Length: 193
Image (tube, rainbow, N blue to C red):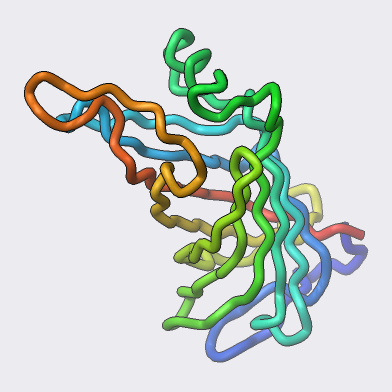
């Protein structure tokens, strides 16, 4: 929390962006979600309800960085049996690998408020490079005097690249669970004192 009455912002390439500093993901204003194909005909949506992230906004915004930790056992698809299966050794193996981790390795400005955040995603002890398409949603001050900014991000991964290979062949052709998983993140970050 800052003591000034004006939000701590600055202009950069036509955008109003947050001042340099450390920001934490607001747990009350975030969604770490995913979408997977089911039986080749529909989509299942879910989220991880327990996730934290630290965003370091650098003086040069392109030098900014992100680290995030997601608790594997917090997976929620609104169906208890499916969630238990996803936590099991056939999928996330949440007991042996309790967290999914992300560490950024670079930021590129794309167009206007759009960026590409490159990094390393670790699931079940397997680390692979990923590129997140990030949209900077804006900066402001909360009614509680906290400097905040909003963002959304998405990417698509092949779950088999991380050792998540469980599946069932369908009589009609195809498989029970699609290989491609879309990751969708929405959040607000709060400046730390």
